[in-house]
Length: 138
Image: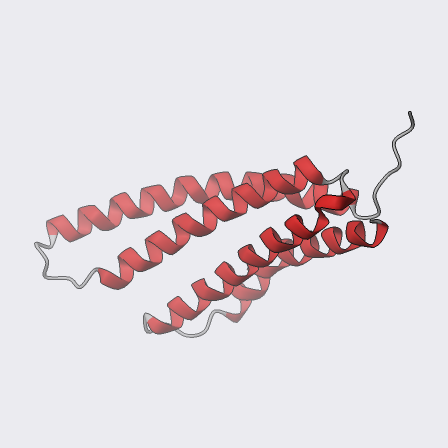
């Protein structure tokens, strides 16, 4: 039986692999960041308001897990056009979390990170494009 290649298979496979790598690295960094925030909170004896830091750390952790899951879903389902909708939903979740991170950055008192936002949206956008191409085949 010959395998009919889905239109977005390559997009999903490549972006999925990149998301798995990025998500795994981000997960490690987020865990280290949360440990660092906890240490800073402990050392400062509550003198530093760490609520925003914890919020950013938790958002980073959630984003990393979502990116890792999205990558796995993409690689696993890149040959299955009937799963294109699921892939699109996961890609959108990662994009929304990226935007939420930028909003949290502004809420923390920093300038809006336009470059970081655009860079963070590239992979999810390509992932969603791949899923949309697969959906066209279904």
